[in-house]
Length: 317
Image 1 (cartoon, rainbow, N blue to C red):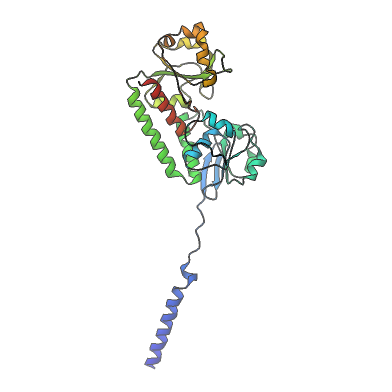
Image 2 (image 1 turned 30 degrees about the vertical axis):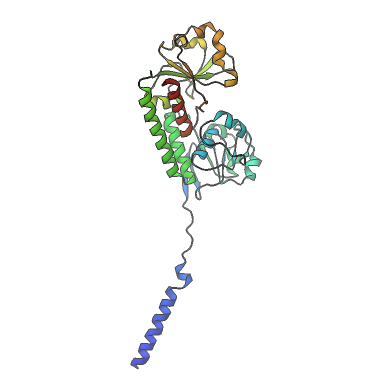
């Protein structure tokens, strides 16, 4: 009896061990990706997991995707992007062009099978339902009147990174921007920090300019580096003032006038025959400075860092 009991116990133990070591018990089911919720200008957007096939319908977010190490499958205004946005990686030739930012091609976008479409809320407001029928849409509003544009840029950059599972890359990019801001502040402190920033308006050669007022992203980037915006004119919802050259007489004599303009048709060079322009004290003193290569003044962290670098290069000799 005792022998039989020992044998029976041994058999039970062996079966138990075999059961514990069987593939059915040791192979855990694959974990499904955690859902991600991103808040955009229209509310929360839920994604089943990090997006990998992204279509960008705005240059700002194209720049940010590339900065995060994500190559979009399609972008709007692809050819013009490389002319205007000079910071960060270039768009690879293999990326599809999906039309213009104002009128993206829905059929082309659908053919790319995206799992995320990102763009500007104002531009996408009229066709967002059609785009949502293709893929989840995240639409940011960069000129939220309730927030500073620099804060909005950083916030939307983090949100976009979250949708891609790239939170770490976003933190690194923003840390680089903080370091660039601190470095620029130190270098500019002895160079004269009262500035105005402008670009041509009304077509090349016109005696009309658009000036960046304090609510604008570009102004806030430079102010963060310790500079003071001398322009006090009335601004639109984007933080911009479009004025004739005569309005620049309101700027102080010691202002550093920073500007961007196409190299092939530089409006500010053509103003050499304009007596109002040539009579401005900062023009007489040689305190006009072209930023080149032209920073994209509505971009993400890469363009912000480039604006700081170009400003230092122009003012610190």
